[in-house]
Image (cartoon, rainbow, N blue to C red; front, side, top):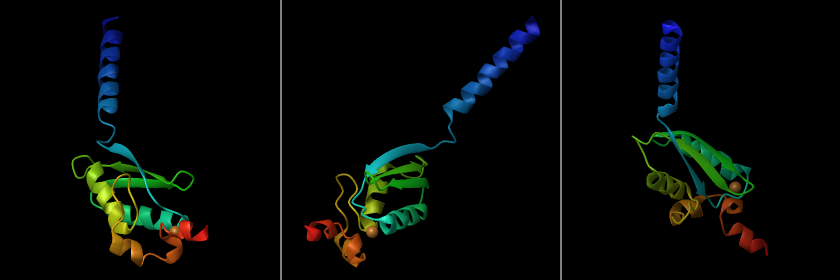
Length: 116
Ligand SMILES: [Cu+2]
C-alpha cells in the first residue's frame, strides 16, 4: 500500500514536470500578407534561419503563420519584425518596403490588387 502511494506520488511529479516545461517553447500566430506557395516557402525558410525560432507553419488559407519559438531567445515583436524584413506584413507591423519590392511581383501584397 505504501509503495503504490509512493509510485503514484512520483508519477504525479514526473507528469507535472513534463507539462510545466513543454520543451521550453512558446507559440504565436501572426497574420501575414503571404499570397502563394512561394511566399509560404520563403517565410518558413527565412524564419527557420531566424534566432530563437523553433518551427513555423504558414497556412495559405488564412495567411496566418504559426511560429514556435524559444521565449528566452526571441519574442513576438522580434518575430514580426523578422517577417517584415522578409517582405511581408505581420499583424500591425507593415512589410519592410525594400524587402517587399525585391520580391517577385506575384508575391508582392499589391499583386492581388492589380488583378482587380
Ligand atoms: Cu508568393
